Image (cartoon, rainbow, N blue to C red):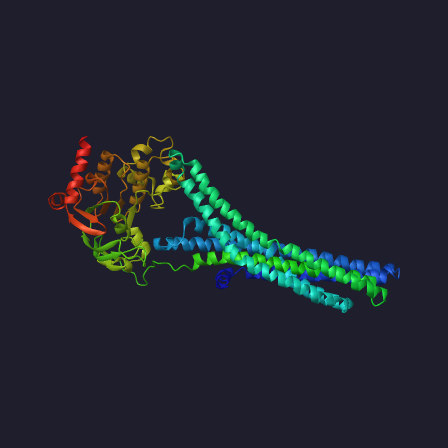
Length: 575
């Protein structure tokens, strides 16, 4: 139930709408409960005595009760709609804001598809539970209590039937809820699996088409879809027992009341109107129990979703800004015996004993075989992850002592598969700097060698970019991402193999243009030696450890890996 407390804490400011809605239902229900009592008076005193004044008097009272019930029902609908809409909107906003605060290590705890489900499907489950649950939650107990009271007022002896039938229904419903409670969480996990496969397929649709794997992916989808269908079938199978149990109990009560009631009428112990009134209350009481059982089923399912949403909200953010942040003196970078691994439970470190000094305004390159932890190394600089041992300093200040926003503004990182968002080129560029002028955008694009192909587009900088940049080539996408990073005016620029899709001449032009930016510390990860051989320093990584550091000439003499890589690429270029 702790998850309910977490979510309830976000209902501040809108709780009054929930309370007013429940109060309106209570008043509406109270008027409804009086109608059968008035109807029994009409039969017993109006019909039997042929007194038309009773018809008019009680008829007007019934009409007034129905009218007031309608008015309060409409007030409930208005307040409930406002409360539920605002609450669910707030839940989605809170979840989304929390995800934006996550560090990469937090995101590693959740699959992307699961986060999407928690933001959409799980919130919708709670919304449906509130929409379909508030009214019966308030009506059920009131009708049950008042119905029983009214039945005993009309005829206490006959109403004893309820004391036998009501517990039967309660016991059946208890076992139903107990059975399906754990099944709803499995159901939401199955929805996660379906969403994950759909997301993967839509993201990699071009690869699927290229490898003609349509049928294979359809088979995979059929498996997860069938699994979801099986869980849904089992869950709703047990939930559907609710209605037959209600009908069985209701008919048992009606039969019992009719048998005893007829005998009491024949023995002149009660009147026909009393039996009619009690039979009306049977329907109300049984309906109230049905409402309560449905509320339990809704709560049971919504608790599973509440738990999943609470997990997102309560996830402790791995990276926080310091209480007393410091400001770096310059853009120099120092690694001091840095050790790092992605999971605390991992046996081996991804990076081991990294000690390295990068002077401010210098350019450095990083080379290494696939899996040597090149990307892991540079992701520690802007604190996308935190080191496990040692420290990293920028301008002689530990990165953990720098405000996160200031640090991320200081460092711009361009990944190999960096993403463009749907919108115009200008809108994508202003992700780097919302206040950037058109001149600033053009200047950054010229440095990144993107202006040349933008000018050839029909709408130039107003050209619309599809989601993920699918309507531009890989090289064009990389150059646009570099330009976007430059618009941040960073002191440190990290290019993580982000020119791999451009030709050698364009790569050279980008490097030459970057040199013109004064005071910019550049870190370049590359596969091509030609991309980093001009750098002031080149670091060679092997299995997460520093193998060699030096400039091109030094490494040609001292590093067998660097010399072999350079010679093999030179031979490849000559061919």
